[in-house]
Image (cartoon, rainbow, N blue to C red; front, side):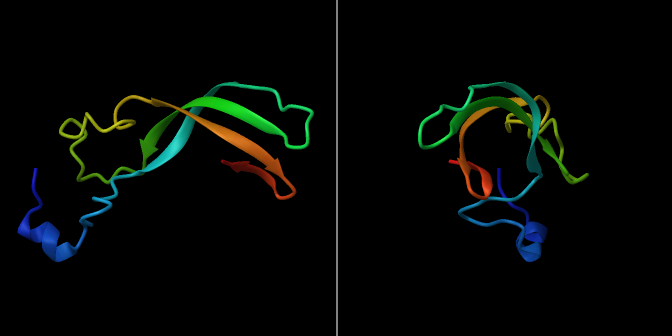
Length: 89
């Protein structure tokens, strides 16, 4: 796959980052652990996410191998409770 001359002129492609075709949002929180009672409250969260705000010019079938494009994708992260709320770690 390559970028067209029009794409080069529009400067939509970054050699390191590629091109943005949407943003991730959580689709469903599947499970989480309860915070411990130690000095630091930590939880592990499993969830699914999907892409939203995908531009109309994106051919979703051509990009069907991109995670989250047509079906939710699985994810997991650790959250730590701080004095400013929960933070992804």
